[in-house]
Structure formats: C-alpha cells, structure tokens
Length: 390
Image: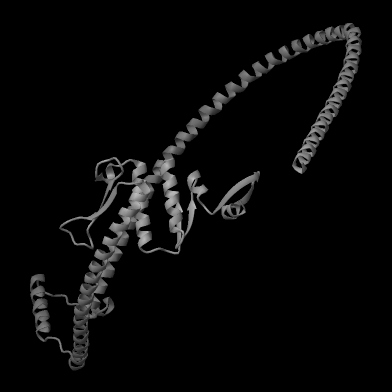
C-alpha cells in the first residue's frame, strides 16, 4: 500500500510539472504575440510617415526640373569654353614637342662625344696599368738579385761595387770556377757539435716508446681475450633468451589471434650475433607464411605479439604505447585490450589511442577539449571508481 501511495504521489507530481510547463509555454506565446502586434503598429506608423514624405517630394519636383534645365545650359557654356582652351593647349603642346626634338638632337651629339672621350680614357688606363705592371716586375727582379747576392755571397750592392773587376773573363769560365768552389765547400761536410746530446735524447725517447709498445701489445692481447669471453657469453645468453622469446611469442600470438601459430627463426650459416630474425606467422584458418605476405592488420597484430612476448619475459615497470592498434579491426582491438589487462599486474601502461575498444578497457581516460575558443581544458574520467560505484 505504501508503494502504491508513493506511485500516486509521483504521478501527481509529474502531472503538476506538466501543467507548469504548459503554463510557461502559454505565457511565452502571449509575450511573442504582444511583441508581434507592437512591431506591426510601429511599421504601420513608419509607412504613413514615408507616404507623406513622398507626397511632399512630388509637389516640389516641378521646381527642381526648372533649376536643372538652368544648370544644363550653364554646363553647355562651360563645355564650349573648355573646348576652346583645349585647342589652345594642343597648339602649345605641338610647340613644346618641336623644342623637345631639337634638345634631344643636341643631347645625342653630346653623348656621342662623351663616349669617344670615355674610350680614350679607357685606353690610357690600360696602358698605364701595363707600364705599372712592368715596373713592378723590374723592381721584383731587382729585389731578387739583391737577395741572391746576400744569400750567396753576403754582399750588398754598395759593397759589391768595391769588388767590381773590369776584366772578368768569359762567363763560362766564371761558372766553372764557382762550381769548383761550391764543391770544395760541400766536401768539408757538416760538423754537429750536439751529436752526443742528441743521441741521449733519441735513446731516451726510444726506450720510452718501446715500453709503451710492449704495454699496448699486452693490452691488445687482454682486450682480445675479454672480447672473446664477451662474445661467448652474449652468444650463450642470446640463445637462452631467444628460445624463451620463441615460447612467449607463440603464447602471445595464440591469445591475440585466437589461435594459429607464431614462430621466430634465425638465419642459418651466420654468426648468431649478426644473424637476422625471420618472423613466421600462421593466423587461424591460413597457411604458414612469412610476415611480409600478411595484411596490414595481421602485420600490426604480429608485431604487437612480439612486443608483448618480450614484455612478458622481462616486464618493465612503465610502458608507453602510441596507437599501435590503429591498423586492427574491432574484434582484434578487443583481444588486444583484454590481453593488455593481463599485463597490468606488473607494468603500468600509458596508451595514446582513438579506438573505442582500447578506451573501454582502460582504468582512466585523459583528453583535451576546447569548450571556449582558444582555451584548452583537460578532461579526465576514472573508470575504476565508476565500476566500484556500480
């Protein structure tokens, strides 16, 4: 009975609300009708006023016509006056054109004379430059001769005048004598007074470099041994981890594709540290084939399976994913989101996405909206609290 009483009260409340809404609508319609009546009355008054103004204008149009005829007559007189002035101006213009042609002829004669003078000046400049260059060469040859005299004989030109001989014989005989003297000077040899000190310095340098060479050889042998140990350790560790990743990849592949088989293989006849990795995928209902033969969505889902396989092997505390499921269809997005929830036990994920399936599986959503032009606002939704409330 209490429930029936509450329902009756609720129905009465709804009826009262409906009556209030209808009263408000009637009041609003009455206001609109009053505004329309006021607007029509004001427009009627404006039309009456406009009618009276038009009648006044028609009564005064005859006077305006007479005034305009007078204005037309005065304009015709002014046109005649301007026509006479135009003829005078044309005659004066012809006179000015004749004077301009005469001036242009005189200017051309002056310009031709200027060009001739410019050519003469250019020719003189070239000749001056040639003579100046020749003078510099002669001066340079003179400086070279002075330097040669000083370097070879340590004699300046003023001092050389003292040794000048009037009868110097033939030039060939002088050259032979000069060569003989130079040969005798070379036969004297070079005396190094610092030879003992130089030997000590060289010996000390040689001893130091020999010790460094031995240290480098030993270091090289040690580094080669360390590199060999590291290569062996890396091969062993890579083999173990690769086998684990193969198992995890197959598991993740089956869960994400809802069946099928995923395989990882290394290139044969190649060093394991430099070998390439082949990804072989077999989605449900298809033959075993290379990853390059898959569709775009299947490639993306296979890559996601490989990423999650590595994540399962060694979970990281934090992971950022940027629209990795953009190429997937809705059903694959749902499997991707469901699998991602399993990984949240050990890893915190931040996902940049626009897919509804991924957003519905998230704990919290963050977005940017622009409620006002030029003002960005951060919007967040905590889906975990909403679920707890429900």
